[in-house]
Image (cartoon, rainbow over all chains, first blue to last red; front, side, top):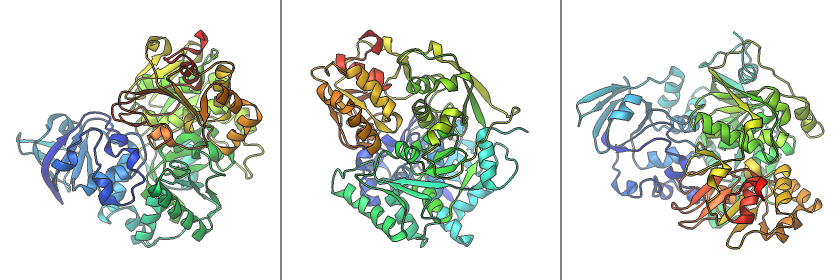
Length: 163
Length: 419
């Protein structure tokens, strides 16, 4: 599986309140919820983002609330991957559990700039910045986590185990 | 190799003798929690995956606390989903309006969580129960759904930071000042993927409500959990509440910690975290010029009876400043009733504050105290992110109940000792 798209770049500590403000957490419909993605940090994100685009941020992406709505609205807007120097742990789990690819790579998070064209090979964890002609190597997922991703999320992987 | 408290609890729940940091394990869980925001997502995921089952109807708790009494039609519909699910599966611990409380104040109070437990909850502040010597951590709705169906969860065993508490705390210093100070020291990702293991002679200084407040905000340092040793105060709290056996785990003397942070309680100042991160902790005296338009006293961090008593001690015989709205939210029905019986509710109302039914409402900008652009609140809640309590151009300053109550009286951020 590969990803290819334009980068939306953010800084440290992008919290779940700016990814999807709590005032919208009464919305059940994922499509409606997704129209408010990143609203409090980037009011034009939803207008500009295209399927395949890539979010890049620095440290502690997704900190704060446990709301699964956060990775969900990012995925729902067609984002193919989030790359960050580090992720808050609940966001990390949630992203994997719902099948939003995320990669930890401090070097890529630092050097890739807003608007760059980036390509990712998930099998190898290789991130290629086409605009800059540079490559970065992300950490590979442990086998256990790969299993969850391959089954399309946690519940499906549990079912595959016969739960 | 020696293990920390957290590692021992995880090993016991995974049915193995020893775990090491980084190891992936599957553990049995003693309680799975969800609320009216995260519950519906979990329920929909279960149904979508055709896994509409509950592993143990006594070990699932559904607490309607975020947007109740329902703030609007959509919130009402989310509660209906939870209510229907609870009925369908005979969920014993379903807490609706009139019996509910803010989940992390309610579950310990009702004796549903105990020392040695392994707990997951679809709410980031589930780490609160570490105050009782339990392993508890926040997860998302899908993890929660898996827990509801199977009674199990996967974890990566965390490495640990030791937080050594020493000294005696000064008047007006509470658990909130300890945790805000700690987050200020290590940063909002200072304990990322790690456990915070509190220990040292200073622990005995802290009441259970102080410890709940500290463990509650472990997540604000990025931690997986925060945990306290079990002592006489813990036992006394659980006696008469927890109707089952609990297990006391102690860290091995040769347990390994990534590092040790020492906090001398005697040197702590009333501490306030300024926008827009909990790590921006400052001593209260540096902020005396900061005017506030709203004071919120409540939440899963600071809505317990001790918090109410401290706020009432300050507000008794005083009045909330003109142009300040003070909102007091006892965290559970029991705390509310105690406020009435002890005359605290009367103190609040006479001081010009409103006293609300339990709700998470304003903490996450849901309702019951939303800020307009340019407004500023002093709040005993746990997050001061951009837009957290309302407009993206509003501000939240985090503090203890003592500082919030004193600031409500003066209209600017105030050291309670100066009143």
